[in-house]
Length: 211
Image (cartoon, rainbow, N blue to C red):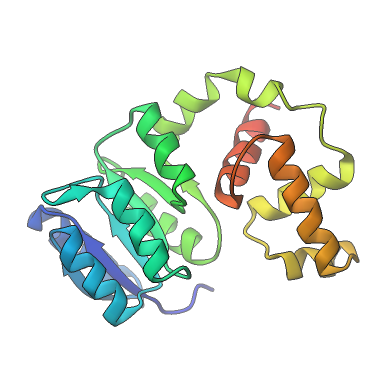
């Protein structure tokens, strides 16, 4: 079970934050510890409150949510970030994931889906809106280009990375030294041409969808 977490909402539409706050507080044990309508306030709240999760809009009055995501990750590396937005353009999705987002959801999702996504991200998983996923999955070349490069051991480790396992967890499960796992992960990222574990998880999710 996901432990109780502090959640910060960052959106310049008060109706959106009110609705999400009500949804979280009525259906979970998590705490909405703060609300911000711009990035400046968001940075201060992240620094003061160190929330476990931030729900962040892409377009804000004082800047770009992707740049905001990078700044939030610098302030509090342990804080997970879900982008909650109306934009489904592929270039925006890719830029956001490369910047380290733990999730990407469109604002038209239903209540049950957003609650599940929050718990999934808090438990270490990555979530991407299904309608966005379809756009990425339609480009089969991304997956097929690397399909036969990974060894069976690398595929197993990639699968564990995609489920949110840490290097230590993977080492214990695969009976390997943690340093060896770290080397494996670096090699896997290089082979599939991604820059972080979030992108690796998305790669695995696409691959399984096409199998």
